[in-house]
Length: 179
Image 1 (tube, rainbow, N blue to C red):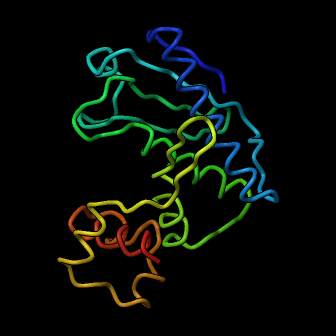
Image 2 (tube, helix red, strand yellow):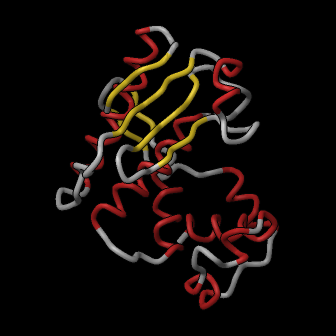
């Protein structure tokens, strides 16, 4: 990771440490995965939501990951807003990068489900790791919504309404996470 930003050095180092801890846990869980990407990953850490605002792809963005042919970018702010944790987004998207480095053409439900599972990564005391903790929105959606038939879930691709339309994507992500 190449770290930079207008946040304090302490905050930038803390972000770098969390990313390295996540990567380390992944290397221990999946020793045969390809962790070295063919391009570098630049991490831009903003000190506040207001300093991040001009660069955000959306108003509610807490963190963003953009893979590219020459460089991957991660952007986030260390300032938390409400319940949004930018690391959930970053860990989700970084999981996609690791999966796609190792496997070609994985099913969308598997890729999204695994990314949602690992988005909950938490580490305490530099050694106690928690993975796969319940995601409240998914639990609620699974209780309150009609489930997709498994055949439909397994057939979803990047062009499917269940992947692209907000009112349909929620149950797709929840079921993929649960599965």
